[in-house]
Image (cartoon, rainbow, N blue to C red; front, side):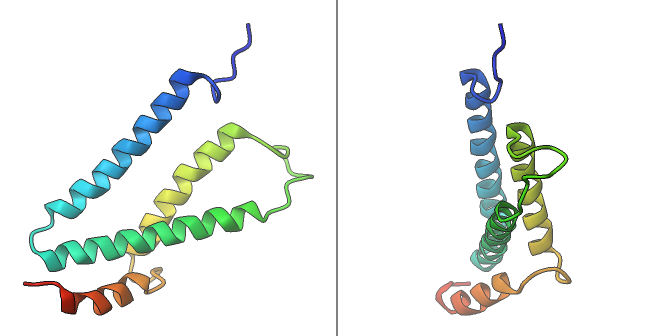
Length: 116
C-alpha cells in the first residue's frame, strides 16, 4: 500500500496546525511588545517579512525546472521551500543591511496615529 504523505489527511492537518501555531507565535510576539509604538514597529517588520516571503516565492515560481536535477514537481521540496522562504523573509526584514525599507516607511507613516 503506497500512501502519499502529502495528501494524507493527518499530514495535512499537521501542516495546518503548524501554520496556525506560526501565526499565533507572530501574534504573541507583537502583543508582548510593551508600548503601542513597539507593537507598530513589530507589525511593520512582520509585514515586510511577509512581503519578502511572497516575493521570494513568486520569484521561485518563475524558474524553469524542466531540466533540473530534482525534476519538475516535488511536493516535499515545495513544502520545505515555503518554510525556507518564510525564514529568509523574516531574517531579511530584521536585518538593517538586508531590509528593503518597507517596515521603516510603514512605521513612519503610521506612528502619528498611535498614542504613546
